[in-house]
Image (cartoon, rainbow, N blue to C red; front, side, top):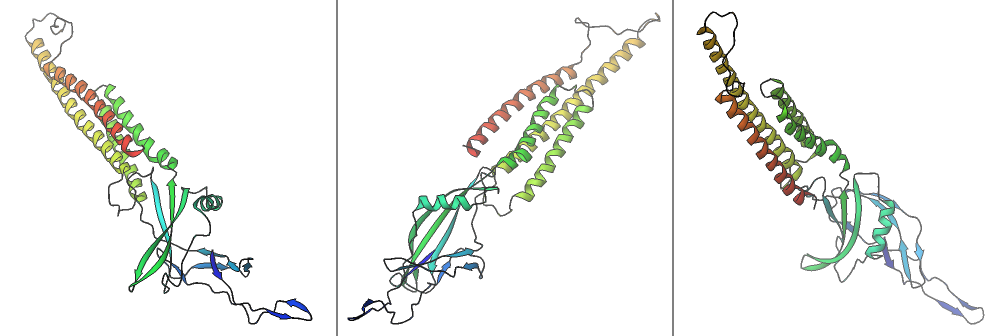
Length: 315
């Protein structure tokens, strides 16, 4: 909303006909050359109003609707729980502070309240506040008056929580529960590889969502990458445990063959049992100890990581 003072009315008095206001010359409404510093387009979509409101204290008010595109540097470190601050700076192209001053038409509370009514509430962003501040800029050794609108908006994270964060967390939970699958079979390894491939698909989706020019790695990227790495380490542990179990099964097979070949021809085949009635090899025992120890350390690592990430991400 632009304002301009109009004081070019002259008055004359006729002693016979009374007092009458007669304009001496045609009134002119001056519109200042206000530009927006953050604008990235040279042409604005402006809807000019044909009406001018004249107030009793010689103030002329003209209202124009301006649609423009501005540049705003975004900090995506806490994406999708991020809050962004964007500035719109109004200043004159040629006039100094002695010739033109720019002041807000209303206070911050009224500006925020009115803007929330027109803001697109169904979109991805939520308007938090609009604050105004004054500043000065130097132009050829002359000061210019600047009016800065600071717009604070917050992202609605529900879509990204449902599509990325929760599925990745469920994949991590499934990976933990996969430790209870029998390690001697091949189903456990194929199950973990499937989880790793699923997270890879979500990482591709995340790569298309986030810009590649971020100053810092977003926490959601750290979240997905660490979980991807944990599942990858879990797959390596499963391969190692499966190898030890296979060595134990091979050793038992050799012992059973030696026991059968050294036995008398009795008519039945039976390997000598140990004191528990079950024959175990050293390889199988080591494999189970490693599997249980890794599961405990795995759970501790997940709890510590999610706790530290949650404090930095949400709070």
